[in-house]
Image 1 (cartoon, rainbow, N blue to C red):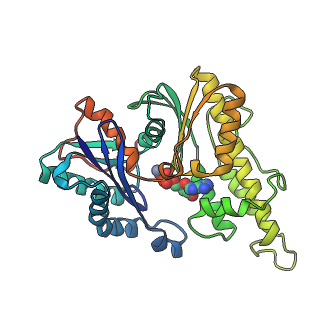
Image 2: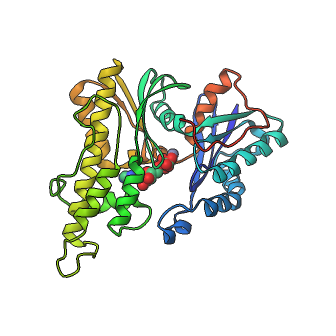
Image 3: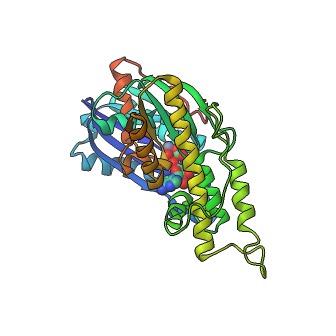
Length: 336
Ligand code: KG4
Ligand code: ZN
């Protein structure tokens, strides 16, 4: 039994073919970075129009790589929430059209739950119950995950998501778009102790995050570095030090809140997903903390961290329960 899954929640047009094991046969991601770069961020209308152009070619290529045709597909899955509503709508409409034309069931999948399921996919075995942590451009949220489909929110961010903070600080430092990977690159030659940036709520038991104060602190530290030109964006070692100190502050908070969530919930497994999980400093800090505390850590490989359709293999769990979507399925911008 083969599934075809679609992902169009933000600026990646993606499709995947997987079996009911689940085992991924192919996964294709068409990035739109070049379209959004000159605006310094994702422009929703441009993203939706690009999805419309890219979706069917991406599906074709995904089928070709899986050595399959549409006639082999027994179920169509789609991320219908959360995300940019106009972007999500392209995937949802495409998935409905394919399911209807092929006469196969349609399954709606939550993109955030899929980010955690990417860990299950990579592990090749059951990892539930666990603490699930989604750290992306839109979310910084800790969940108690008793099963792949039952998630209880333990806590989240009051303002920016961690990925959003990376993107905004990258913009402040003149590093361009996409911010997260560029900031990580810049931080490699910087001193993470050069600036003492705030780590909100780190000493408190509350499973809450806030990154807006940190962002502002970087802004003020960035200004005035050059006495002759106080509004200039720092360059060279000064910029690398700002990037490294910012990154370390984010990572310290993210890892400490994971530790607290594990301690408080009594769970021993941690599954982390979302674009920021691609960050090597974050991955290394998670590995060190879980090894020290005796927890089991699951992090997906890089290709399953950022947005993709393979992680929508969560649809297999819904399929086993007969949990199918109707043809009036809608795109929902937010789900928490
Ligand atoms: O999961 P994702 O691809 O899309 C959403 O669902 O939001 O996450 C994208 C976010 C962006 O904010 C991006 O800057 C961040 O993940 N990101 C990173 C890295 N790669 C992507 N942040 C820090 N370091 C990275 N290497
Ligand atoms: Zn995502």
